[in-house]
Image (cartoon, rainbow, N blue to C red):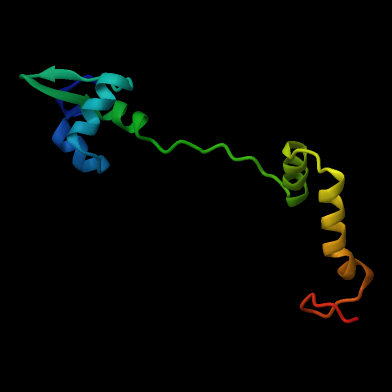
Length: 108
């Protein structure tokens, strides 16, 4: 907890230090829980609170393999009707049967 005037900085100083505008700091004070005090009629923020408030926060990422992603997409996709299945099979049949060149063109 801040104990002396040296432990505090003005909003202008804080904005320069953290590369944010004074209005952004005011928003964080009003709505996002950044504590502030008035000293000699000016709004000041404790250096410790600034460091905590603007400290980098880890982003939670989910490691997902390509197979996991494909399965997740399949689970979300609506089922194909018979006509759609037939169209897909006929489009890929030459490649599956080995009747295409390296560009996917039919050889027969």
